[in-house]
Amino acid sequence: MLSGILLSMAVSVGAGPASNAGVVFSSAGETCLALSGAPLPVGSVVTVVLPDVPQRVLGATVEGPLDSCEMMTRSGVVGPFYRLALQGRVPDGPLLGVAAVGAPRPIAADGLARLTWGQFKHASVRSCTSREGLHLTIWEGEPLKTRRLWHHYWYLGYDVEPSCVDADVEESGPEAEVGR
Image 1 (cartoon, rainbow, N blue to C red):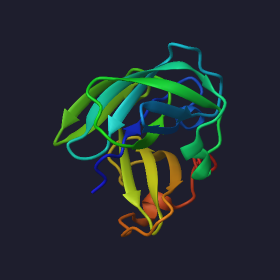
Image 2: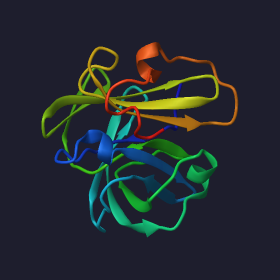
Image 3: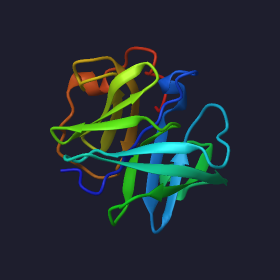
Image 4: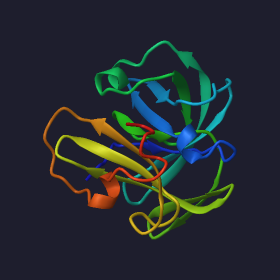
């Protein structure tokens, strides 16, 4: 359903997951990361999860800051922005996702990636559609059954068939103000 969508995720445990989660977009050979919080130095590691089942995990490193990222700006995403270098086999086409800092140990089971780092032993990612966009989320464990750690809405600009449930989109918890 969401083939070609990239969901990258990383968390800085010291500052809390929501403060270091962000959005990634890649197209035409350039990969942008929008991430609020403390500035990221060149060489920072980012973990990337491709959310289509079977999910895959890629790594990335920060190459440096960017003044802007046009596609993110068109979807209402604010910076600061960074240029990322993706590692591993990256699918062709535009990629969209969620990102932050870290190198967790990925575990794959039943086509889903679970990430272990810091206090989170089975963090997972989920994406779903609303009428005109994608809701990207990070969960403490199994999506929809555990605490949602991070949420971001990405405006697509065209109609899609909704697949989200209330837990994907409701405004609650400490992450509600992040990524909106």
